[in-house]
Length: 270
Ligand code: 5RP
Image (tube, rainbow, N blue to C red; front, side):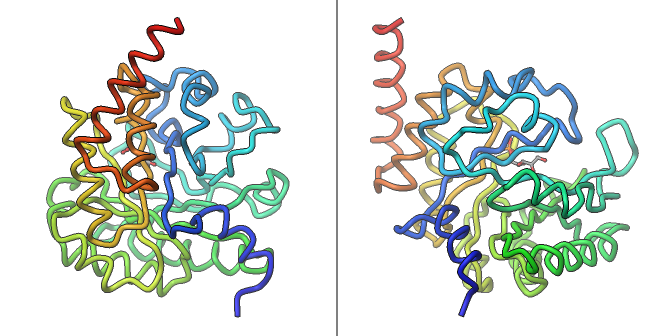
């Protein structure tokens, strides 16, 4: 039986329909002042009403997010490498348990770099973080990070399936991984909810709604998506559409029509 505090926190991360919509705005911790996230607070405000949780690093959280927000926070707690360096995978826990508690977050997120020089370091880092967080009933979301070998790893369903399972066995209670057309193979091997990560902004909104819809049909719990929302010229429309796919069983076409309706609404009000 899960401890009361863990059940309470999890109930705000995975909603009653067993689905979830996380907005990722943590990119600055390794990418710096990412286009579309110059000011996390300004990018968050228009889409806040649509999302179930915000994934963010502590700098932007403290500087730019209203501490009275009703949106649960998932705090990015791994770091140590950047786009300036040679190897993105050399990460460790970058936030102390004291600061995690001080920030009163709903959960924390930590990257594991399988099939990299830092596999052991990041996997044992996840174990230690889970050990610390279990003491305080704080859920840990593992991120199956791919570093610069992105395309190769994202297309390998055996890699994604095994990486997710290993994160869950290590103690993560939610795992984030990349969409694959055989997403059911990933979910079937993983005893905890799996959420779909996004990736670079695509040219076509319908394409995003289609892969999220397909992933949901194949057992994904939801998404942890960033650039395809806040780099979109219509972030509110995209957030509303994703919410409809995740929580309201909308088809990609129905959700796409919603993006246009929300945009029209916005233009009319503006
Ligand atoms: C970046 C991350 C992001 O949370 C994740 O990649 C999702 O964002 P996007 O949809 O923009 O890829 O872990 O470090």
